[in-house]
Length: 309
Length: 329
Image (cartoon, each protein chain N blue to C red):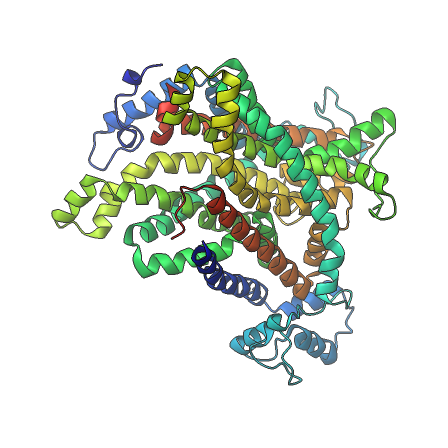
Protein backbone atom coordinates (compact mmCIF):
# COMPACT_ATOMS: atom_id res chain seq x y z
CA UNK A 1 0.00 0.00 0.00
CA UNK A 2 1.17 3.50 -0.50
CA UNK A 3 1.38 6.45 1.78
CA UNK A 4 -1.10 8.40 -0.29
CA UNK A 5 -3.86 6.35 1.26
CA UNK A 6 -3.10 7.76 4.65
CA UNK A 7 -3.47 11.43 3.96
CA UNK A 8 -4.74 12.62 7.27
CA UNK A 9 -2.54 12.69 10.36
CA UNK A 10 -3.27 10.13 13.05
CA UNK A 11 -4.56 12.75 15.43
CA UNK A 12 -7.12 13.90 12.94
CA UNK A 13 -8.44 10.53 11.95
CA UNK A 14 -9.47 9.02 15.17
CA UNK A 15 -9.72 11.99 17.38
CA UNK A 16 -12.08 14.65 16.36
CA UNK A 17 -11.34 17.64 18.54
CA UNK A 18 -14.29 19.38 20.06
CA UNK A 19 -16.26 21.55 17.74
CA UNK A 20 -15.52 19.47 14.70
CA UNK A 21 -18.39 18.41 12.49
CA UNK A 22 -19.91 15.04 13.40
CA UNK A 23 -19.75 14.16 9.71
CA UNK A 24 -15.97 14.43 9.80
CA UNK A 25 -15.86 12.18 12.84
CA UNK A 26 -17.99 9.63 11.06
CA UNK A 27 -15.77 9.81 8.01
CA UNK A 28 -12.68 9.21 10.17
CA UNK A 29 -14.28 6.16 11.73
CA UNK A 30 -15.35 4.81 8.36
CA UNK A 31 -11.83 5.42 7.11
CA UNK A 32 -10.33 3.30 9.89
CA UNK A 33 -12.85 0.51 9.33
CA UNK A 34 -12.26 0.50 5.57
CA UNK A 35 -8.50 0.39 5.97
CA UNK A 36 -8.87 -2.38 8.54
CA UNK A 37 -10.99 -4.44 6.16
CA UNK A 38 -8.71 -3.86 3.22
CA UNK A 39 -5.25 -4.27 4.69
CA UNK A 40 -5.71 -6.18 7.92
CA UNK A 41 -8.15 -9.01 7.17
CA UNK A 42 -7.22 -10.93 10.31
CA UNK A 43 -7.71 -7.88 12.50
CA UNK A 44 -10.99 -7.16 10.77
CA UNK A 45 -12.15 -10.73 11.37
CA UNK A 46 -11.14 -10.30 15.01
CA UNK A 47 -13.26 -7.17 15.15
CA UNK A 48 -16.24 -9.05 13.75
CA UNK A 49 -15.87 -11.79 16.37
CA UNK A 50 -15.75 -9.13 19.07
CA UNK A 51 -18.98 -7.62 17.72
CA UNK A 52 -20.63 -11.05 17.72
CA UNK A 53 -19.52 -11.64 21.32
CA UNK A 54 -20.88 -8.24 22.27
CA UNK A 55 -24.17 -9.09 20.63
CA UNK A 56 -24.27 -12.48 22.37
CA UNK A 57 -23.51 -10.83 25.70
CA UNK A 58 -26.21 -8.19 25.33
CA UNK A 59 -28.92 -10.55 24.13
CA UNK A 60 -27.91 -13.54 26.27
CA UNK A 61 -31.47 -13.81 27.69
CA UNK A 62 -32.88 -14.36 24.22
CA UNK A 63 -30.11 -16.49 22.81
CA UNK A 64 -29.50 -18.94 25.63
CA UNK A 65 -31.70 -22.02 25.44
CA UNK A 66 -31.75 -22.31 29.25
CA UNK A 67 -31.15 -20.04 32.22
CA UNK A 68 -27.59 -19.86 33.54
CA UNK A 69 -28.58 -21.42 36.83
CA UNK A 70 -31.35 -23.83 35.78
CA UNK A 71 -30.36 -27.00 37.55
CA UNK A 72 -31.78 -30.37 36.73
CA UNK A 73 -30.26 -33.21 38.65
CA UNK A 74 -31.75 -35.79 36.31
CA UNK A 75 -29.69 -34.29 33.51
CA UNK A 76 -26.44 -33.92 35.39
CA UNK A 77 -23.16 -34.55 33.57
CA UNK A 78 -24.93 -35.51 30.37
CA UNK A 79 -22.84 -35.54 27.22
CA UNK A 80 -23.50 -33.10 24.38
CA UNK A 81 -26.83 -33.91 22.70
CA UNK A 82 -29.58 -32.20 20.72
CA UNK A 83 -31.17 -30.91 23.92
CA UNK A 84 -27.86 -29.73 25.40
CA UNK A 85 -25.54 -28.94 22.51
CA UNK A 86 -22.46 -28.68 24.72
CA UNK A 87 -23.64 -31.03 27.47
CA UNK A 88 -24.47 -30.23 31.07
CA UNK A 89 -22.44 -29.72 34.24
CA UNK A 90 -22.49 -31.49 37.59
CA UNK A 91 -25.75 -29.85 38.62
CA UNK A 92 -27.40 -30.35 35.25
CA UNK A 93 -26.96 -26.80 34.03
CA UNK A 94 -26.67 -26.32 30.29
CA UNK A 95 -23.04 -25.56 29.41
CA UNK A 96 -23.91 -23.65 26.22
CA UNK A 97 -26.29 -21.35 28.07
CA UNK A 98 -23.68 -20.69 30.73
CA UNK A 99 -21.12 -19.86 28.07
CA UNK A 100 -23.57 -17.46 26.42
CA UNK A 101 -24.23 -15.71 29.73
CA UNK A 102 -20.50 -15.87 30.39
CA UNK A 103 -19.95 -13.65 27.36
CA UNK A 104 -21.95 -11.00 29.20
CA UNK A 105 -19.64 -11.16 32.22
CA UNK A 106 -16.47 -11.25 30.15
CA UNK A 107 -17.58 -8.35 28.00
CA UNK A 108 -18.72 -6.30 30.99
CA UNK A 109 -15.45 -6.81 32.81
CA UNK A 110 -13.43 -6.29 29.64
CA UNK A 111 -15.12 -3.09 28.50
CA UNK A 112 -15.70 -1.51 31.90
CA UNK A 113 -12.23 -2.44 33.14
CA UNK A 114 -10.58 -1.14 29.98
CA UNK A 115 -12.61 2.08 30.18
CA UNK A 116 -11.37 2.70 33.72
CA UNK A 117 -7.88 1.73 32.60
CA UNK A 118 -7.85 4.32 29.83
CA UNK A 119 -9.55 7.16 31.74
CA UNK A 120 -7.48 6.76 34.89
CA UNK A 121 -4.36 5.96 32.91
CA UNK A 122 -4.82 9.19 30.99
CA UNK A 123 -5.50 11.21 34.13
CA UNK A 124 -2.36 9.88 35.83
CA UNK A 125 -0.14 9.67 32.77
CA UNK A 126 -1.16 12.92 31.12
CA UNK A 127 -1.12 15.12 34.18
CA UNK A 128 2.23 13.84 35.40
CA UNK A 129 3.73 13.88 31.91
CA UNK A 130 2.36 17.31 31.10
CA UNK A 131 2.99 19.09 34.37
CA UNK A 132 6.28 17.34 35.06
CA UNK A 133 8.35 18.54 37.98
CA UNK A 134 8.06 17.31 41.55
CA UNK A 135 4.54 15.94 41.12
CA UNK A 136 5.76 13.77 38.27
CA UNK A 137 8.76 12.61 40.28
CA UNK A 138 6.67 11.60 43.28
CA UNK A 139 3.91 9.89 41.29
CA UNK A 140 6.40 8.03 39.12
CA UNK A 141 8.07 6.57 42.20
CA UNK A 142 4.65 5.35 43.41
CA UNK A 143 4.00 3.85 39.99
CA UNK A 144 7.43 2.16 40.21
CA UNK A 145 6.51 0.69 43.55
CA UNK A 146 3.20 -0.70 42.34
CA UNK A 147 4.73 -1.98 39.14
CA UNK A 148 7.12 -4.00 41.25
CA UNK A 149 4.35 -6.49 42.00
CA UNK A 150 3.60 -9.20 39.48
CA UNK A 151 0.19 -8.27 38.04
CA UNK A 152 -1.65 -11.43 38.93
CA UNK A 153 -0.20 -11.43 42.45
CA UNK A 154 -1.36 -7.86 42.97
CA UNK A 155 -4.85 -8.63 41.65
CA UNK A 156 -5.12 -11.75 43.82
CA UNK A 157 -4.01 -10.00 46.98
CA UNK A 158 -6.30 -7.02 46.50
CA UNK A 159 -9.27 -9.23 45.54
CA UNK A 160 -8.76 -11.39 48.60
CA UNK A 161 -8.89 -8.23 50.68
CA UNK A 162 -11.82 -6.57 48.91
CA UNK A 163 -13.90 -9.70 48.44
CA UNK A 164 -15.44 -11.37 45.41
CA UNK A 165 -17.95 -9.68 43.15
CA UNK A 166 -18.38 -8.14 39.74
CA UNK A 167 -18.08 -4.50 40.79
CA UNK A 168 -15.00 -4.94 43.00
CA UNK A 169 -13.45 -7.00 40.24
CA UNK A 170 -13.97 -4.33 37.59
CA UNK A 171 -12.66 -1.61 39.91
CA UNK A 172 -9.62 -3.56 41.04
CA UNK A 173 -8.66 -4.67 37.52
CA UNK A 174 -9.30 -1.26 35.97
CA UNK A 175 -7.58 0.83 38.63
CA UNK A 176 -4.52 -1.35 39.10
CA UNK A 177 -3.94 -1.77 35.41
CA UNK A 178 -4.37 1.96 34.84
CA UNK A 179 -1.32 2.44 37.05
CA UNK A 180 0.66 0.09 34.82
CA UNK A 181 -0.77 1.66 31.66
CA UNK A 182 -0.16 5.24 32.74
CA UNK A 183 3.50 4.83 31.74
CA UNK A 184 2.65 4.26 28.07
CA UNK A 185 0.24 7.18 28.04
CA UNK A 186 2.72 9.39 29.84
CA UNK A 187 5.39 8.79 27.25
CA UNK A 188 2.89 9.51 24.47
CA UNK A 189 2.02 12.79 26.17
CA UNK A 190 5.69 13.66 26.58
CA UNK A 191 6.04 13.22 22.82
CA UNK A 192 3.09 15.49 22.07
CA UNK A 193 4.29 18.11 24.53
CA UNK A 194 7.29 18.97 22.35
CA UNK A 195 5.16 19.98 19.35
CA UNK A 196 5.10 23.56 18.11
CA UNK A 197 1.35 23.85 18.51
CA UNK A 198 1.77 23.39 22.24
CA UNK A 199 4.30 26.22 22.30
CA UNK A 200 1.83 28.26 20.26
CA UNK A 201 -0.90 27.53 22.78
CA UNK A 202 1.43 28.57 25.60
CA UNK A 203 2.21 31.79 23.74
CA UNK A 204 -1.49 32.44 23.35
CA UNK A 205 -1.86 32.18 27.10
CA UNK A 206 -3.90 28.99 27.16
CA UNK A 207 -4.28 27.43 30.59
CA UNK A 208 -2.71 24.03 31.17
CA UNK A 209 -6.08 22.38 31.63
CA UNK A 210 -7.26 23.77 28.32
CA UNK A 211 -4.13 22.61 26.52
CA UNK A 212 -4.50 19.16 28.07
CA UNK A 213 -8.07 18.80 26.86
CA UNK A 214 -7.91 20.65 23.55
CA UNK A 215 -4.43 19.84 22.30
CA UNK A 216 -2.94 16.89 24.12
CA UNK A 217 -5.97 14.63 24.44
CA UNK A 218 -6.97 14.62 20.75
CA UNK A 219 -3.40 13.80 19.77
CA UNK A 220 -3.00 10.82 22.04
CA UNK A 221 -6.37 9.32 21.12
CA UNK A 222 -4.77 6.74 18.79
CA UNK A 223 -2.61 5.55 21.69
CA UNK A 224 -5.68 5.46 23.92
CA UNK A 225 -7.63 3.40 21.40
CA UNK A 226 -4.82 0.85 21.16
CA UNK A 227 -4.44 0.77 24.94
CA UNK A 228 -8.18 0.28 25.30
CA UNK A 229 -8.41 -2.60 22.85
CA UNK A 230 -5.45 -4.49 24.25
CA UNK A 231 -6.67 -3.83 27.80
CA UNK A 232 -10.04 -5.44 26.99
CA UNK A 233 -8.22 -8.67 26.15
CA UNK A 234 -6.03 -8.51 29.24
CA UNK A 235 -9.04 -7.79 31.49
CA UNK A 236 -10.99 -10.74 30.12
CA UNK A 237 -8.02 -13.01 30.68
CA UNK A 238 -7.39 -11.62 34.17
CA UNK A 239 -11.05 -12.03 35.12
CA UNK A 240 -10.97 -15.64 33.94
CA UNK A 241 -7.78 -16.36 35.88
CA UNK A 242 -9.10 -14.77 39.07
CA UNK A 243 -12.45 -16.56 38.78
CA UNK A 244 -10.57 -19.78 38.07
CA UNK A 245 -8.64 -19.35 41.32
CA UNK A 246 -11.85 -18.46 43.16
CA UNK A 247 -11.20 -14.75 43.64
CA UNK A 248 -13.24 -13.30 40.80
CA UNK A 249 -16.92 -13.51 39.99
CA UNK A 250 -18.63 -15.63 42.67
CA UNK A 251 -20.79 -18.64 41.75
CA UNK A 252 -23.45 -19.25 40.52
CA UNK A 253 -22.68 -16.53 37.97
CA UNK A 254 -21.23 -18.10 34.87
CA UNK A 255 -17.72 -16.77 34.32
CA UNK A 256 -15.73 -18.66 31.72
CA UNK A 257 -12.79 -18.92 34.08
CA UNK A 258 -15.01 -19.95 36.97
CA UNK A 259 -16.54 -22.74 34.88
CA UNK A 260 -13.06 -24.21 34.47
CA UNK A 261 -12.30 -24.21 38.17
CA UNK A 262 -13.55 -26.43 41.01
CA UNK A 263 -16.37 -28.45 39.47
CA UNK A 264 -14.82 -28.23 36.01
CA UNK A 265 -11.69 -29.83 37.42
CA UNK A 266 -13.37 -32.30 39.73
CA UNK A 267 -15.60 -33.77 37.05
CA UNK A 268 -13.20 -33.31 34.18
CA UNK A 269 -12.71 -37.00 33.48
CA UNK A 270 -16.43 -37.78 33.44
CA UNK A 271 -17.45 -34.60 31.68
CA UNK A 272 -14.52 -33.05 29.78
CA UNK A 273 -16.92 -30.74 27.90
CA UNK A 274 -17.41 -28.80 31.14
CA UNK A 275 -13.85 -27.55 30.92
CA UNK A 276 -13.30 -27.67 27.17
CA UNK A 277 -15.87 -25.22 25.83
CA UNK A 278 -15.54 -22.32 28.27
CA UNK A 279 -11.83 -22.35 27.48
CA UNK A 280 -12.48 -22.35 23.75
CA UNK A 281 -14.79 -19.34 24.17
CA UNK A 282 -12.20 -17.57 26.29
CA UNK A 283 -9.32 -18.24 23.92
CA UNK A 284 -11.40 -17.17 20.91
CA UNK A 285 -12.46 -13.94 22.59
CA UNK A 286 -8.98 -12.95 23.71
CA UNK A 287 -7.39 -13.99 20.42
CA UNK A 288 -9.88 -11.92 18.40
CA UNK A 289 -9.46 -8.84 20.54
CA UNK A 290 -5.68 -9.08 20.40
CA UNK A 291 -5.79 -9.48 16.62
CA UNK A 292 -7.97 -6.38 16.39
CA UNK A 293 -5.73 -4.44 18.76
CA UNK A 294 -2.65 -5.45 16.83
CA UNK A 295 -4.16 -4.36 13.52
CA UNK A 296 -5.37 -1.08 15.01
CA UNK A 297 -1.90 -0.44 16.32
CA UNK A 298 -0.47 -0.87 12.83
CA UNK A 299 -3.04 1.49 11.36
CA UNK A 300 -3.17 4.15 14.05
CA UNK A 301 0.26 4.27 15.63
CA UNK A 302 2.27 6.95 13.83
CA UNK A 303 5.55 5.38 14.89
CA UNK A 304 4.69 2.20 13.03
CA UNK A 305 3.27 3.99 10.04
CA UNK A 306 6.41 3.49 7.98
CA UNK A 307 6.37 -0.25 8.56
CA UNK A 308 3.00 -0.48 6.85
CA UNK A 309 4.24 0.51 3.44
CA UNK B 1 29.16 3.86 34.74
CA UNK B 2 29.80 3.61 38.48
CA UNK B 3 27.89 6.84 39.01
CA UNK B 4 24.99 5.47 37.00
CA UNK B 5 24.87 2.29 39.05
CA UNK B 6 25.00 4.22 42.30
CA UNK B 7 22.24 6.57 41.14
CA UNK B 8 20.07 3.61 40.22
CA UNK B 9 20.64 1.96 43.56
CA UNK B 10 19.73 5.17 45.37
CA UNK B 11 16.53 5.36 43.30
CA UNK B 12 15.67 1.89 44.59
CA UNK B 13 15.13 3.23 48.08
CA UNK B 14 11.91 5.20 47.39
CA UNK B 15 10.60 2.33 45.26
CA UNK B 16 11.22 -0.20 48.01
CA UNK B 17 9.59 2.13 50.53
CA UNK B 18 6.48 2.39 48.36
CA UNK B 19 6.46 -1.39 48.06
CA UNK B 20 6.58 -1.86 51.83
CA UNK B 21 3.82 0.70 52.33
CA UNK B 22 1.61 -1.01 49.73
CA UNK B 23 2.22 -4.43 51.27
CA UNK B 24 1.64 -3.09 54.76
CA UNK B 25 -1.55 -1.21 53.94
CA UNK B 26 -3.05 -3.94 51.77
CA UNK B 27 -3.38 -6.07 54.86
CA UNK B 28 -4.48 -3.29 57.21
CA UNK B 29 -7.08 -1.55 55.07
CA UNK B 30 -9.40 -4.45 54.85
CA UNK B 31 -13.04 -3.43 55.10
CA UNK B 32 -14.28 -4.79 58.38
CA UNK B 33 -12.01 -6.15 61.02
CA UNK B 34 -9.32 -8.58 59.88
CA UNK B 35 -9.54 -10.43 63.13
CA UNK B 36 -13.32 -10.86 62.85
CA UNK B 37 -12.93 -12.18 59.35
CA UNK B 38 -10.21 -14.57 60.36
CA UNK B 39 -12.17 -15.86 63.33
CA UNK B 40 -15.22 -16.34 61.09
CA UNK B 41 -13.08 -18.19 58.60
CA UNK B 42 -11.61 -20.47 61.22
CA UNK B 43 -15.19 -21.51 61.79
CA UNK B 44 -14.87 -21.74 65.56
CA UNK B 45 -18.32 -22.75 66.70
CA UNK B 46 -19.15 -20.20 69.36
CA UNK B 47 -15.96 -20.78 71.23
CA UNK B 48 -14.36 -17.48 70.25
CA UNK B 49 -12.80 -16.26 73.40
CA UNK B 50 -11.34 -12.88 74.12
CA UNK B 51 -8.02 -14.70 74.32
CA UNK B 52 -8.16 -15.89 70.70
CA UNK B 53 -8.94 -12.37 69.57
CA UNK B 54 -6.10 -10.90 71.58
CA UNK B 55 -3.69 -13.55 70.41
CA UNK B 56 -4.58 -12.82 66.80
CA UNK B 57 -4.42 -9.06 67.26
CA UNK B 58 -1.04 -9.43 68.86
CA UNK B 59 0.19 -11.79 66.16
CA UNK B 60 -0.82 -9.24 63.56
CA UNK B 61 0.43 -6.40 65.74
CA UNK B 62 -2.91 -4.65 65.47
CA UNK B 63 -3.11 -3.45 69.06
CA UNK B 64 -1.15 -0.22 68.47
CA UNK B 65 -1.77 2.79 66.16
CA UNK B 66 -1.07 2.44 62.46
CA UNK B 67 2.21 4.41 62.17
CA UNK B 68 3.67 2.50 65.11
CA UNK B 69 2.55 -0.76 63.51
CA UNK B 70 4.38 0.19 60.35
CA UNK B 71 7.50 1.28 62.22
CA UNK B 72 7.53 -1.97 64.16
CA UNK B 73 6.90 -4.04 61.10
CA UNK B 74 9.73 -2.29 59.29
CA UNK B 75 12.01 -2.58 62.29
CA UNK B 76 12.38 1.18 62.85
CA UNK B 77 10.85 0.88 66.29
CA UNK B 78 11.14 -1.81 68.95
CA UNK B 79 8.31 -4.33 69.09
CA UNK B 80 6.10 -5.10 72.07
CA UNK B 81 8.86 -7.07 73.77
CA UNK B 82 11.39 -4.28 73.38
CA UNK B 83 13.35 -5.93 70.55
CA UNK B 84 13.70 -4.65 67.04
CA UNK B 85 12.07 -7.37 64.97
CA UNK B 86 11.20 -5.96 61.60
CA UNK B 87 12.09 -6.19 57.96
CA UNK B 88 15.36 -4.35 58.51
CA UNK B 89 16.43 -7.11 60.87
CA UNK B 90 15.47 -9.64 58.22
CA UNK B 91 12.40 -10.74 60.12
CA UNK B 92 9.36 -11.40 57.95
CA UNK B 93 7.19 -12.71 60.77
CA UNK B 94 5.60 -16.10 61.28
CA UNK B 95 2.88 -17.81 59.33
CA UNK B 96 -0.44 -17.91 61.17
CA UNK B 97 -1.33 -21.24 59.65
CA UNK B 98 1.78 -23.30 60.22
CA UNK B 99 3.59 -21.26 62.83
CA UNK B 100 6.79 -21.51 60.79
CA UNK B 101 8.84 -18.45 60.03
CA UNK B 102 7.86 -16.82 56.75
CA UNK B 103 11.48 -16.63 55.64
CA UNK B 104 11.93 -20.39 56.06
CA UNK B 105 8.81 -21.08 54.00
CA UNK B 106 9.99 -18.76 51.24
CA UNK B 107 13.38 -20.43 51.04
CA UNK B 108 11.74 -23.85 51.01
CA UNK B 109 9.38 -23.02 48.17
CA UNK B 110 11.68 -20.91 46.03
CA UNK B 111 13.51 -23.72 44.12
CA UNK B 112 10.29 -25.05 42.57
CA UNK B 113 9.23 -21.65 41.23
CA UNK B 114 12.76 -20.89 40.12
CA UNK B 115 12.97 -24.12 38.14
CA UNK B 116 9.58 -23.44 36.52
CA UNK B 117 10.59 -19.89 35.64
CA UNK B 118 13.88 -21.08 34.18
CA UNK B 119 12.24 -23.69 31.94
CA UNK B 120 9.66 -21.11 30.89
CA UNK B 121 12.33 -18.56 30.02
CA UNK B 122 14.40 -21.03 28.02
CA UNK B 123 11.32 -22.26 26.13
CA UNK B 124 10.26 -18.71 25.39
CA UNK B 125 13.68 -17.60 24.18
CA UNK B 126 14.23 -20.67 22.01
CA UNK B 127 10.90 -20.29 20.22
CA UNK B 128 10.50 -16.53 20.19
CA UNK B 129 13.84 -15.28 18.95
CA UNK B 130 14.04 -17.38 15.74
CA UNK B 131 10.37 -16.82 14.86
CA UNK B 132 10.61 -13.11 15.65
CA UNK B 133 13.70 -12.73 13.45
CA UNK B 134 12.15 -14.68 10.62
CA UNK B 135 8.88 -12.77 10.84
CA UNK B 136 10.72 -9.48 10.55
CA UNK B 137 12.96 -10.33 7.62
CA UNK B 138 9.92 -11.65 5.73
CA UNK B 139 7.76 -8.70 6.77
CA UNK B 140 4.17 -8.64 5.45
CA UNK B 141 4.44 -11.98 3.70
CA UNK B 142 2.19 -14.91 4.49
CA UNK B 143 4.98 -16.35 6.64
CA UNK B 144 5.18 -13.14 8.66
CA UNK B 145 1.42 -13.29 9.24
CA UNK B 146 1.74 -16.89 10.33
CA UNK B 147 4.50 -15.98 12.76
CA UNK B 148 2.55 -13.06 14.19
CA UNK B 149 -0.60 -15.13 14.50
CA UNK B 150 1.36 -17.75 16.43
CA UNK B 151 2.60 -15.07 18.80
CA UNK B 152 -0.87 -13.64 19.38
CA UNK B 153 -2.19 -17.17 19.79
CA UNK B 154 0.43 -17.85 22.47
CA UNK B 155 -0.55 -14.68 24.30
CA UNK B 156 -4.28 -15.34 24.02
CA UNK B 157 -4.68 -18.99 24.94
CA UNK B 158 -5.01 -19.14 28.70
CA UNK B 159 -2.32 -21.40 30.15
CA UNK B 160 -4.62 -22.55 32.92
CA UNK B 161 -7.07 -23.87 30.38
CA UNK B 162 -4.40 -25.66 28.34
CA UNK B 163 -3.04 -27.06 31.59
CA UNK B 164 -6.47 -28.41 32.48
CA UNK B 165 -6.82 -29.91 29.00
CA UNK B 166 -3.47 -31.66 29.42
CA UNK B 167 -4.76 -33.15 32.64
CA UNK B 168 -8.01 -34.27 30.99
CA UNK B 169 -7.57 -35.57 27.47
CA UNK B 170 -4.44 -37.73 27.70
CA UNK B 171 -6.05 -39.33 30.74
CA UNK B 172 -9.19 -40.14 28.76
CA UNK B 173 -7.49 -41.20 25.55
CA UNK B 174 -4.37 -42.99 26.77
CA UNK B 175 -4.93 -43.23 30.50
CA UNK B 176 -1.87 -41.06 31.02
CA UNK B 177 -1.72 -38.06 33.27
CA UNK B 178 1.10 -35.94 34.61
CA UNK B 179 2.37 -36.94 38.00
CA UNK B 180 0.66 -34.98 40.72
CA UNK B 181 3.13 -35.87 43.39
CA UNK B 182 6.06 -33.53 43.61
CA UNK B 183 9.37 -35.23 42.80
CA UNK B 184 12.29 -33.31 44.31
CA UNK B 185 15.21 -32.61 42.02
CA UNK B 186 17.78 -34.19 44.32
CA UNK B 187 15.84 -37.43 44.68
CA UNK B 188 15.08 -38.13 41.05
CA UNK B 189 16.62 -35.81 38.51
CA UNK B 190 14.97 -37.27 35.42
CA UNK B 191 11.57 -37.67 37.03
CA UNK B 192 11.69 -34.12 38.29
CA UNK B 193 12.62 -32.73 34.91
CA UNK B 194 9.85 -34.66 33.17
CA UNK B 195 7.39 -33.41 35.72
CA UNK B 196 8.40 -29.78 35.25
CA UNK B 197 8.57 -29.85 31.48
CA UNK B 198 4.85 -29.46 30.70
CA UNK B 199 4.07 -26.76 33.27
CA UNK B 200 7.28 -25.00 32.27
CA UNK B 201 6.32 -25.02 28.59
CA UNK B 202 2.84 -23.72 29.38
CA UNK B 203 4.28 -20.91 31.42
CA UNK B 204 6.74 -20.16 28.64
CA UNK B 205 4.04 -19.85 26.00
CA UNK B 206 2.57 -16.49 26.96
CA UNK B 207 6.08 -15.26 27.50
CA UNK B 208 7.20 -16.51 24.10
CA UNK B 209 4.34 -14.66 22.45
CA UNK B 210 5.31 -11.37 24.03
CA UNK B 211 8.98 -11.94 23.28
CA UNK B 212 8.31 -12.78 19.65
CA UNK B 213 6.51 -9.49 19.07
CA UNK B 214 9.27 -7.50 20.69
CA UNK B 215 11.97 -9.29 18.76
CA UNK B 216 10.11 -8.60 15.52
CA UNK B 217 9.62 -4.91 16.28
CA UNK B 218 13.26 -4.49 17.25
CA UNK B 219 14.41 -6.27 14.10
CA UNK B 220 12.22 -4.04 11.94
CA UNK B 221 13.67 -0.97 13.58
CA UNK B 222 17.25 -2.09 13.03
CA UNK B 223 16.53 -3.20 9.45
CA UNK B 224 15.78 0.44 8.62
CA UNK B 225 19.08 1.76 9.94
CA UNK B 226 21.62 3.29 7.60
CA UNK B 227 24.38 0.90 8.59
CA UNK B 228 22.19 -1.98 7.44
CA UNK B 229 21.71 -0.28 4.09
CA UNK B 230 25.46 0.13 3.91
CA UNK B 231 25.95 -3.55 4.63
CA UNK B 232 23.58 -4.44 1.79
CA UNK B 233 25.26 -1.92 -0.50
CA UNK B 234 28.63 -3.52 0.20
CA UNK B 235 27.14 -6.62 -1.39
CA UNK B 236 27.17 -8.80 1.71
CA UNK B 237 24.88 -11.80 1.50
CA UNK B 238 21.66 -11.93 3.50
CA UNK B 239 22.92 -14.31 6.14
CA UNK B 240 25.84 -12.03 6.94
CA UNK B 241 23.78 -8.85 7.03
CA UNK B 242 21.10 -10.36 9.21
CA UNK B 243 23.37 -12.18 11.61
CA UNK B 244 26.19 -9.69 11.95
CA UNK B 245 24.43 -6.37 11.62
CA UNK B 246 20.77 -6.76 12.43
CA UNK B 247 20.29 -9.54 14.98
CA UNK B 248 23.21 -8.45 17.12
CA UNK B 249 21.82 -4.94 17.46
CA UNK B 250 18.20 -5.99 17.77
CA UNK B 251 19.04 -8.35 20.62
CA UNK B 252 20.30 -5.60 22.90
CA UNK B 253 16.90 -4.12 23.80
CA UNK B 254 15.42 -7.59 23.91
CA UNK B 255 17.64 -8.24 26.92
CA UNK B 256 15.49 -5.80 28.84
CA UNK B 257 12.41 -7.87 28.27
CA UNK B 258 13.65 -10.39 30.76
CA UNK B 259 12.76 -7.64 33.21
CA UNK B 260 9.44 -7.03 31.52
CA UNK B 261 8.40 -10.66 31.28
CA UNK B 262 9.45 -11.58 34.78
CA UNK B 263 6.13 -10.39 36.28
CA UNK B 264 4.32 -12.66 33.82
CA UNK B 265 6.41 -15.63 34.89
CA UNK B 266 6.10 -14.95 38.59
CA UNK B 267 2.36 -14.27 38.36
CA UNK B 268 1.90 -17.29 36.13
CA UNK B 269 3.45 -19.62 38.66
CA UNK B 270 0.44 -19.04 40.93
CA UNK B 271 -1.89 -20.62 38.39
CA UNK B 272 0.41 -23.26 36.94
CA UNK B 273 1.55 -24.50 40.34
CA UNK B 274 -2.05 -24.73 41.44
CA UNK B 275 -3.06 -26.86 38.45
CA UNK B 276 -0.07 -29.18 38.58
CA UNK B 277 0.11 -29.15 42.37
CA UNK B 278 3.75 -28.08 42.50
CA UNK B 279 4.81 -26.77 45.90
CA UNK B 280 6.33 -23.44 44.82
CA UNK B 281 5.84 -19.84 45.88
CA UNK B 282 2.69 -19.52 43.76
CA UNK B 283 0.96 -22.40 45.48
CA UNK B 284 2.13 -21.05 48.82
CA UNK B 285 0.56 -17.68 48.00
CA UNK B 286 -2.66 -19.34 46.88
CA UNK B 287 -2.90 -21.31 50.11
CA UNK B 288 -2.01 -18.26 52.18
CA UNK B 289 -4.72 -16.21 50.44
CA UNK B 290 -7.31 -18.88 51.09
CA UNK B 291 -6.36 -19.09 54.74
CA UNK B 292 -6.01 -15.30 55.05
CA UNK B 293 -2.55 -15.89 56.45
CA UNK B 294 -1.64 -12.20 56.32
CA UNK B 295 1.97 -12.29 57.51
CA UNK B 296 2.67 -14.95 54.90
CA UNK B 297 0.82 -13.04 52.14
CA UNK B 298 2.80 -9.90 52.97
CA UNK B 299 6.03 -11.88 53.03
CA UNK B 300 5.47 -13.48 49.62
CA UNK B 301 4.40 -10.19 48.05
CA UNK B 302 7.43 -8.40 49.43
CA UNK B 303 9.73 -11.16 48.29
CA UNK B 304 8.34 -11.25 44.74
CA UNK B 305 8.47 -7.46 44.49
CA UNK B 306 12.06 -7.45 45.71
CA UNK B 307 13.03 -10.06 43.10
CA UNK B 308 11.43 -7.95 40.38
CA UNK B 309 13.06 -4.72 41.49
CA UNK B 310 16.52 -6.23 41.73
CA UNK B 311 16.22 -8.02 38.40
CA UNK B 312 15.01 -4.84 36.73
CA UNK B 313 18.06 -3.07 38.11
CA UNK B 314 20.37 -5.77 36.84
CA UNK B 315 18.69 -5.66 33.43
CA UNK B 316 18.95 -1.88 33.18
CA UNK B 317 22.59 -1.90 34.14
CA UNK B 318 23.44 -4.66 31.70
CA UNK B 319 21.52 -2.80 29.01
CA UNK B 320 23.54 0.32 29.62
CA UNK B 321 26.68 -1.80 29.58
CA UNK B 322 25.76 -3.63 26.37
CA UNK B 323 24.72 -0.62 24.35
CA UNK B 324 27.53 1.90 24.06
CA UNK B 325 25.14 4.60 22.84
CA UNK B 326 23.30 4.77 26.15
CA UNK B 327 24.44 7.61 28.32
CA UNK B 328 24.54 6.86 31.97
CA UNK B 329 23.13 10.07 33.22
